[in-house]
Image (cartoon, rainbow, N blue to C red; front, side, top):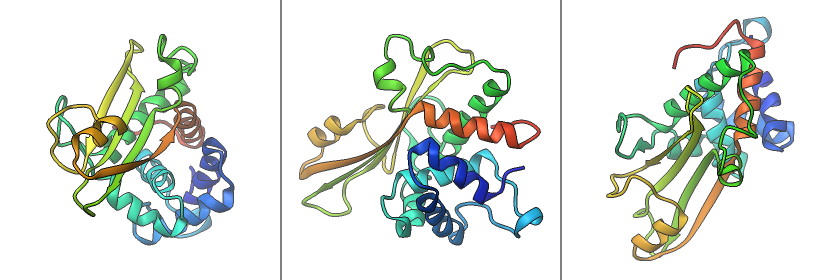
Length: 214
């Protein structure tokens, strides 16, 4: 049964970061209640996939630990564009992906080398992208996240885009944002690989009795 500190320590090597860096992000995210916190030691709260999803967003979306809570505020609630359940938020979709990967990990039925046959360089290295835009008009540009993951059936992959505002297209990347928004000068992107998501899911699988339903 993993605690938040144990989750942060497991997440650090998955993301190629130091334990100190992720623990600092956790400290700020936990203070804002983005990640469950209750008690210490044996009485500490057990981490679920939604806690892992929000801590991942906190770390990936903020180069500085002090901005971890703001990163969760900026990205966790982004809404899916079109398609299946447009009311779904990024944190809940990421929770679903982690739970799916955890279940497959427990069944030893996952291989990042074969999940995205034909597009491994793009998808394996960019399973989650957090994108924000800077330009002449502060506050008028959307924040976007792209989530790519293997379908639970094992047949192909799903690509979904989440955004902070309604947008006319179902998919957005850096180039499209720059071309469609007047005054946009630069985008910033933070990327998380499929391997990192698998490592996090495997940690949760090894520390709990089984996956929670998405």
